[in-house]
Amino acid sequence: MEVYKGDVLSEGIAVGKAYVEKSGFAKWVKKLGGKQDKKALERAINDSIKQIEEIKNNNAENQDYLNIQILLISDPILKEKTFNLLDAGMSASQSVDQVLDEYAQSLTSSTNQYLQQRAIDILDIKNRILSNLNGSDWRLADTHFIYYARQLHPSFLIQNKKKILGIVTNSGGYSSHTAILCRQLNIPYLVSKIKVKDEDLIVLDTRKQQIIVNPDQENLSHYEEIIKKLANESYQAVVHKDFGFYANVSDNSELDKVLEYNFDGVGLYRTEMIFMNTNRPYTYEEQYEIYSEAVEKLTFKPIYFRTFDIGDDKQLPYIKSYKKGIDNYKNNPVLFRTQIEALINANKYDNLGIMFPMIFNNEEFNYLRNWVLDIKKELGNTSQIKLGMMLETREAMEKLREFENVDFISIGTNDLVLSIYHINRNLQKEQMEKYINDLVSKIAEVVQICQDKGISLSICGELAAITNALKSFMKIGVKNFSVATPAIRVLNKVYKEFRVK
Ligand code: PEP
Ligand code: MG
Image 1 (tube, rainbow, N blue to C red):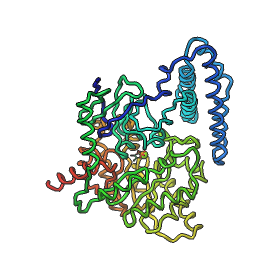
Image 2 (tube, rainbow, N blue to C red):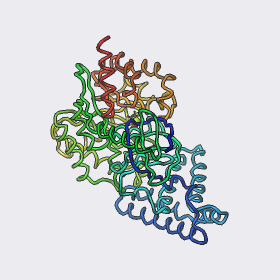
Image 3 (tube, rainbow, N blue to C red):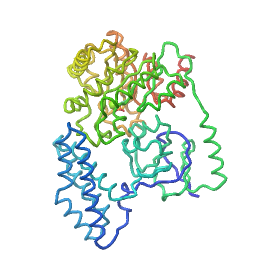
């Protein structure tokens, strides 16, 4: 039995067998010997090309982007460089890891923004080749497991959420989308470096900030008992007069908890997370079914869908993404339109709102608002739909008085803190004291502007579920908060203290 300490990114207790990511730990993947490494590498490259061809056939809008991916993978220089490293004694995985990391590095250090963005494409290609190379791709595991990786992207988590009992990674931060998703899906997540191999039994206990590898029988029985008890736990929102308690969700399966815990509605539905479930764009029919089911479930409670917000750590394999924001819609107009049509038609109870992420100025907001209104008119749809925006850029915050026709605003503190204070979302919780007072005073001005303009305001970033930040937001008059469902406990606690004072 070995016990390791870890930093907690999502709370909970889990017991299960380990599954160690193969491709992420490329350096540890063995050399096959002889000509076998070259053969395996060639096969992995060809499989990767085939997969992208298949994605391309279902995706008219991103042909150019996917063709570039194919060109990059087929590049003879890539093959030559990796083969040279094989000759020098490296394993196939190690050589792919090294060559493509070097490509990505050189793009990242470029001063050209377009090239910098393309580094993500290279890493995407690298992961694809590596997972084809390691036939025992973890995504193929068919039992429940605790996953150990160097780092983890949200798309992998989404595609395997039903199998993953818990996660340990070598690096990661509290506001990364992987951590956000874990908190929403109730999956315990710690950051640590541990020694573990496939099939070892692991216990994650975030209350003690620890990971036990191969626990003894006494510990095992103890934790199995606790897990049974936790499974029956339920929470209820306290009576919260004049305040709104909303939920952040990424999947319809979370809506049962929204109702069970008695939230007032969904304040942020991250629709891009739905899009990560497949290797091709969702059709109108598929989206309509998902949004309708959600709206139906919530019936008279409001539900605010955010239009797909891709970029940074949220990548889709079938779309070329741009800097987070409006360019993703302008360059993928069919995808945007399909989503909007499905949302508008799903609005049967007038409880649906649509919000746009990463807005920089009034022109952008109005461009998207008019686009939605035109589509609504073409559809002959007469339902009431609220159209609002995320406030998550310094530029929009500074010019907020200039905005027109905004029905509601939701403050995305994760991007806003990055935009104003240049603090990466992974470090925002630890470094909170550096910026929180200044941020609160800036948000106090937003509260005033929204009051003057009659715009309803909420906060949906991760700070809304951190006790001290939440206290300060309540003090300056913010009334609506949107958090992952388990954070109802934080809302309840802070609200009660606030009322007593
Ligand atoms: C935010 O930026 O605070 C936010 C809620 O959006 P996301 O975390 O999905 O970027
Ligand atoms: Mg954001």
